[in-house]
Length: 116
Length: 107
Image (cartoon, rainbow over all chains, first blue to last red; front, side, top):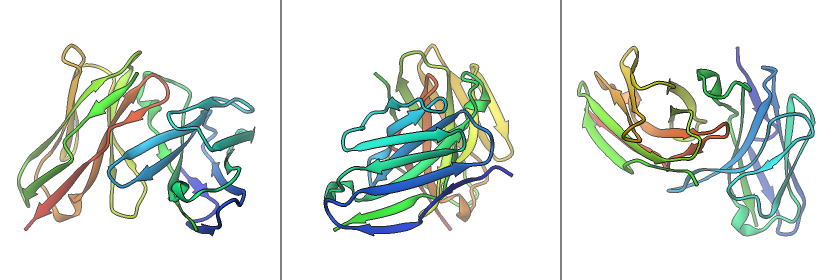
């Protein structure tokens, strides 16, 4: 069964702290994604990765960085958390075969981050 | 750039049929996907159209017309559990998501 896991369901951090959000998938997928979801704004892509050690900026990369040292793991890093980064963070993975139904993204349960 | 437009809210009664439309402007468009998200949960995949036409999966169907840059999700025999947000997504490789349509099913 397909599985994407995220390190925390809920997280509370203080302004200025460095925050690590971890995502692990067990489907041997090449592609991994980080989104944030805010009410009324849908899912906005922060960063994505097509392969180990590769990363691409999404639509809202400012204030974030990522790391993909192993195929199954994709980390999102908030270098210095700010209150406007309070949000739901969703990780997803997909197969590399674009243009087919294998583009399907499988999502983790999400991490609800509160920055005080 | 890439953008997908869908209605913000739709309301229907149990047993009815509802259609959620999605119009898009994307470069290098491959296909259109649909996801369902219940309150507090993660999005889950419903359907994918890589070619023009209708795809049917049980009570749910999805349609794509590339010439019109348009697609829709059709939900039949609505049930209370279908109350959720529905997102269309498309693009080249990395998907861009619409802002979502909140479907409320009333008894």
